View 1: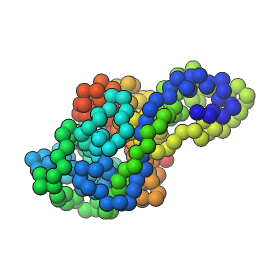
View 2: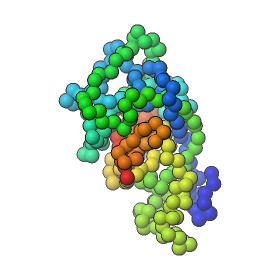
View 3: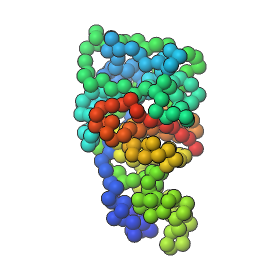
Length: 264
Protein backbone atom coordinates (compact mmCIF):
# COMPACT_ATOMS: atom_id res chain seq x y z
CA UNK A 1 0.00 0.00 0.00
CA UNK A 2 1.16 3.53 -0.75
CA UNK A 3 1.32 5.90 2.20
CA UNK A 4 1.62 9.68 1.85
CA UNK A 5 5.21 10.85 2.34
CA UNK A 6 4.29 12.54 5.62
CA UNK A 7 3.48 9.08 7.03
CA UNK A 8 6.73 7.34 6.06
CA UNK A 9 7.96 7.35 9.67
CA UNK A 10 4.95 5.20 10.62
CA UNK A 11 4.99 2.91 7.60
CA UNK A 12 6.15 -0.24 9.40
CA UNK A 13 3.56 0.16 12.15
CA UNK A 14 0.78 0.74 9.62
CA UNK A 15 1.80 -2.23 7.49
CA UNK A 16 1.78 -4.44 10.59
CA UNK A 17 -1.96 -3.76 10.99
CA UNK A 18 -2.94 -4.90 7.49
CA UNK A 19 -5.56 -7.63 7.48
CA UNK A 20 -7.93 -9.21 4.96
CA UNK A 21 -11.39 -7.80 4.49
CA UNK A 22 -14.29 -8.27 2.09
CA UNK A 23 -15.81 -5.18 0.56
CA UNK A 24 -19.09 -5.41 -1.29
CA UNK A 25 -21.03 -3.29 -3.74
CA UNK A 26 -24.75 -3.45 -4.39
CA UNK A 27 -26.67 -4.43 -7.50
CA UNK A 28 -30.25 -3.66 -8.50
CA UNK A 29 -30.86 -7.19 -9.75
CA UNK A 30 -33.75 -8.78 -7.79
CA UNK A 31 -32.46 -11.39 -5.36
CA UNK A 32 -33.51 -14.92 -4.52
CA UNK A 33 -34.40 -15.74 -0.93
CA UNK A 34 -31.12 -17.38 0.14
CA UNK A 35 -28.87 -14.91 -1.65
CA UNK A 36 -26.62 -12.35 0.07
CA UNK A 37 -28.60 -9.11 0.03
CA UNK A 38 -29.55 -5.79 1.55
CA UNK A 39 -33.31 -5.52 1.95
CA UNK A 40 -35.67 -7.79 0.07
CA UNK A 41 -37.11 -11.06 1.38
CA UNK A 42 -34.96 -12.67 4.08
CA UNK A 43 -34.21 -16.36 4.32
CA UNK A 44 -36.74 -17.70 6.86
CA UNK A 45 -37.44 -21.42 7.34
CA UNK A 46 -41.11 -22.24 7.89
CA UNK A 47 -40.54 -23.14 11.55
CA UNK A 48 -38.55 -19.98 12.31
CA UNK A 49 -40.16 -17.25 14.43
CA UNK A 50 -39.73 -13.85 12.83
CA UNK A 51 -37.57 -11.57 15.06
CA UNK A 52 -39.50 -9.03 17.13
CA UNK A 53 -38.88 -6.42 19.79
CA UNK A 54 -39.63 -7.16 23.44
CA UNK A 55 -43.06 -5.60 22.76
CA UNK A 56 -43.75 -8.04 19.97
CA UNK A 57 -43.28 -5.57 17.12
CA UNK A 58 -41.55 -7.08 14.08
CA UNK A 59 -38.01 -5.91 13.41
CA UNK A 60 -37.10 -4.57 9.99
CA UNK A 61 -34.89 -6.80 7.86
CA UNK A 62 -31.63 -5.04 7.03
CA UNK A 63 -29.29 -7.51 5.32
CA UNK A 64 -28.02 -11.07 5.11
CA UNK A 65 -24.77 -12.75 4.08
CA UNK A 66 -24.69 -16.19 2.54
CA UNK A 67 -21.12 -17.20 3.36
CA UNK A 68 -21.07 -19.75 0.56
CA UNK A 69 -21.23 -16.77 -1.84
CA UNK A 70 -18.49 -14.77 -0.11
CA UNK A 71 -14.69 -15.09 -0.31
CA UNK A 72 -13.45 -16.67 2.91
CA UNK A 73 -12.06 -14.67 5.82
CA UNK A 74 -10.12 -16.05 8.82
CA UNK A 75 -12.46 -17.27 11.59
CA UNK A 76 -15.61 -16.34 9.63
CA UNK A 77 -18.03 -19.10 8.63
CA UNK A 78 -17.67 -20.58 5.16
CA UNK A 79 -21.31 -21.60 4.95
CA UNK A 80 -24.64 -20.60 6.44
CA UNK A 81 -26.57 -17.33 6.36
CA UNK A 82 -26.04 -14.47 8.80
CA UNK A 83 -28.88 -11.95 9.10
CA UNK A 84 -29.27 -8.49 10.58
CA UNK A 85 -32.58 -7.03 11.75
CA UNK A 86 -33.16 -3.60 13.35
CA UNK A 87 -36.10 -1.94 15.07
CA UNK A 88 -38.51 0.17 13.08
CA UNK A 89 -37.99 3.36 15.08
CA UNK A 90 -36.26 6.71 14.79
CA UNK A 91 -33.05 5.29 16.29
CA UNK A 92 -33.07 2.25 13.97
CA UNK A 93 -32.91 0.06 17.09
CA UNK A 94 -29.80 1.67 18.59
CA UNK A 95 -29.61 1.28 22.38
CA UNK A 96 -27.18 3.77 23.91
CA UNK A 97 -27.33 2.09 27.34
CA UNK A 98 -26.72 -1.51 26.26
CA UNK A 99 -25.45 -1.87 22.70
CA UNK A 100 -25.66 -5.67 22.94
CA UNK A 101 -29.35 -5.73 23.92
CA UNK A 102 -30.91 -7.62 21.03
CA UNK A 103 -34.46 -6.67 21.93
CA UNK A 104 -34.15 -3.75 19.47
CA UNK A 105 -32.01 -5.48 16.89
CA UNK A 106 -31.18 -9.10 16.11
CA UNK A 107 -28.34 -11.04 14.55
CA UNK A 108 -29.42 -14.49 13.39
CA UNK A 109 -27.26 -17.30 12.04
CA UNK A 110 -28.69 -20.20 10.03
CA UNK A 111 -26.01 -22.89 9.87
CA UNK A 112 -27.86 -24.97 7.27
CA UNK A 113 -29.38 -23.39 4.18
CA UNK A 114 -32.39 -24.97 2.48
CA UNK A 115 -32.79 -23.90 -1.14
CA UNK A 116 -36.43 -24.87 -1.49
CA UNK A 117 -39.07 -22.13 -1.46
CA UNK A 118 -41.74 -24.57 -0.28
CA UNK A 119 -39.84 -24.91 3.00
CA UNK A 120 -39.36 -21.16 3.43
CA UNK A 121 -41.58 -18.28 4.45
CA UNK A 122 -42.61 -16.07 1.54
CA UNK A 123 -44.22 -13.14 3.36
CA UNK A 124 -42.88 -10.52 5.74
CA UNK A 125 -44.90 -9.20 8.69
CA UNK A 126 -46.29 -5.71 8.24
CA UNK A 127 -44.25 -3.01 9.96
CA UNK A 128 -46.01 -0.26 11.88
CA UNK A 129 -46.30 2.94 9.84
CA UNK A 130 -44.36 5.07 9.31
CA UNK A 131 -41.55 2.69 8.41
CA UNK A 132 -38.28 4.16 9.70
CA UNK A 133 -35.26 2.56 8.09
CA UNK A 134 -31.92 3.50 6.52
CA UNK A 135 -33.12 1.56 3.46
CA UNK A 136 -35.45 2.99 0.81
CA UNK A 137 -38.94 1.55 0.40
CA UNK A 138 -38.85 -1.65 -1.61
CA UNK A 139 -35.09 -2.10 -1.25
CA UNK A 140 -33.78 -5.38 -2.65
CA UNK A 141 -30.08 -5.19 -3.48
CA UNK A 142 -27.74 -8.05 -4.23
CA UNK A 143 -24.12 -8.05 -3.05
CA UNK A 144 -21.00 -8.30 -5.20
CA UNK A 145 -18.00 -9.26 -3.05
CA UNK A 146 -14.37 -8.22 -3.41
CA UNK A 147 -11.70 -9.60 -1.10
CA UNK A 148 -8.85 -7.21 -0.40
CA UNK A 149 -6.63 -6.04 2.46
CA UNK A 150 -6.95 -3.01 4.68
CA UNK A 151 -4.79 -1.13 7.15
CA UNK A 152 -6.10 0.28 10.41
CA UNK A 153 -8.32 3.36 10.08
CA UNK A 154 -7.76 6.59 11.97
CA UNK A 155 -11.27 6.11 13.38
CA UNK A 156 -10.16 3.00 15.26
CA UNK A 157 -9.99 3.32 19.04
CA UNK A 158 -6.44 1.92 19.00
CA UNK A 159 -5.02 3.92 16.08
CA UNK A 160 -3.37 6.60 18.22
CA UNK A 161 -1.71 4.31 20.79
CA UNK A 162 -0.77 1.65 18.23
CA UNK A 163 0.56 3.91 15.45
CA UNK A 164 1.35 7.29 17.01
CA UNK A 165 2.26 6.30 20.59
CA UNK A 166 -0.23 8.83 21.98
CA UNK A 167 -3.42 8.33 23.97
CA UNK A 168 -5.55 10.11 21.36
CA UNK A 169 -5.28 11.70 17.93
CA UNK A 170 -5.62 15.16 19.43
CA UNK A 171 -2.48 14.77 21.54
CA UNK A 172 -0.36 14.12 18.48
CA UNK A 173 1.73 16.82 16.80
CA UNK A 174 3.09 16.18 13.29
CA UNK A 175 6.88 16.48 13.19
CA UNK A 176 6.93 18.71 10.10
CA UNK A 177 4.56 21.25 11.63
CA UNK A 178 1.74 20.23 9.29
CA UNK A 179 -1.75 21.18 10.41
CA UNK A 180 -3.25 18.25 12.35
CA UNK A 181 -6.42 17.98 10.29
CA UNK A 182 -4.52 17.95 7.00
CA UNK A 183 -2.09 15.37 8.37
CA UNK A 184 -4.86 12.89 9.17
CA UNK A 185 -6.79 13.75 6.02
CA UNK A 186 -3.80 12.61 3.97
CA UNK A 187 -3.95 9.20 5.69
CA UNK A 188 -7.71 8.96 5.36
CA UNK A 189 -7.27 9.16 1.59
CA UNK A 190 -6.13 5.51 1.72
CA UNK A 191 -9.09 4.44 3.87
CA UNK A 192 -12.13 2.99 2.17
CA UNK A 193 -15.48 4.13 3.46
CA UNK A 194 -17.22 1.05 2.14
CA UNK A 195 -19.78 -1.61 2.74
CA UNK A 196 -17.56 -4.15 4.46
CA UNK A 197 -17.29 -7.54 6.19
CA UNK A 198 -14.34 -7.94 8.54
CA UNK A 199 -11.42 -5.54 8.51
CA UNK A 200 -11.54 -2.11 10.13
CA UNK A 201 -14.63 0.00 10.68
CA UNK A 202 -14.97 3.69 10.12
CA UNK A 203 -17.11 6.10 12.11
CA UNK A 204 -18.44 9.61 11.63
CA UNK A 205 -18.32 10.06 15.40
CA UNK A 206 -16.29 8.24 18.08
CA UNK A 207 -15.53 4.53 18.02
CA UNK A 208 -17.60 3.12 20.94
CA UNK A 209 -14.68 0.85 21.82
CA UNK A 210 -12.75 3.96 22.84
CA UNK A 211 -15.01 4.76 25.80
CA UNK A 212 -16.50 1.33 26.57
CA UNK A 213 -13.75 -1.09 27.57
CA UNK A 214 -16.24 -3.97 27.49
CA UNK A 215 -15.86 -3.87 23.72
CA UNK A 216 -12.10 -3.27 23.54
CA UNK A 217 -11.40 -6.61 21.86
CA UNK A 218 -14.42 -6.60 19.55
CA UNK A 219 -13.83 -6.62 15.80
CA UNK A 220 -15.94 -5.54 12.85
CA UNK A 221 -18.46 -8.14 11.74
CA UNK A 222 -20.53 -6.20 9.18
CA UNK A 223 -20.63 -2.60 8.03
CA UNK A 224 -23.31 -0.99 5.85
CA UNK A 225 -22.47 2.51 4.71
CA UNK A 226 -24.76 5.24 3.43
CA UNK A 227 -25.02 4.78 -0.32
CA UNK A 228 -26.37 7.62 -2.45
CA UNK A 229 -26.65 5.45 -5.55
CA UNK A 230 -29.07 3.14 -3.76
CA UNK A 231 -30.71 5.71 -1.43
CA UNK A 232 -29.35 4.09 1.73
CA UNK A 233 -29.05 6.73 4.41
CA UNK A 234 -28.10 6.39 8.08
CA UNK A 235 -29.35 9.69 9.52
CA UNK A 236 -27.21 12.49 8.09
CA UNK A 237 -25.00 10.35 5.80
CA UNK A 238 -23.80 8.03 8.56
CA UNK A 239 -22.76 4.41 8.79
CA UNK A 240 -24.03 1.31 10.59
CA UNK A 241 -21.86 -1.44 12.03
CA UNK A 242 -22.09 -4.71 13.95
CA UNK A 243 -19.15 -5.90 16.07
CA UNK A 244 -18.26 -9.21 17.70
CA UNK A 245 -15.68 -10.67 20.05
CA UNK A 246 -13.24 -12.90 18.11
CA UNK A 247 -13.93 -15.87 20.39
CA UNK A 248 -17.67 -15.55 19.79
CA UNK A 249 -17.10 -15.39 16.04
CA UNK A 250 -15.08 -18.61 16.12
CA UNK A 251 -17.84 -20.24 18.19
CA UNK A 252 -20.56 -18.93 15.85
CA UNK A 253 -22.16 -17.24 18.85
CA UNK A 254 -23.84 -14.04 17.67
CA UNK A 255 -25.80 -13.39 20.86
CA UNK A 256 -23.38 -10.77 22.22
CA UNK A 257 -22.84 -8.71 19.07
CA UNK A 258 -22.90 -4.97 19.64
CA UNK A 259 -24.62 -2.67 17.14
CA UNK A 260 -23.82 0.96 16.48
CA UNK A 261 -24.62 3.57 13.93
CA UNK A 262 -23.69 7.22 13.86
CA UNK A 263 -23.85 10.21 11.55
CA UNK A 264 -22.17 13.56 11.23
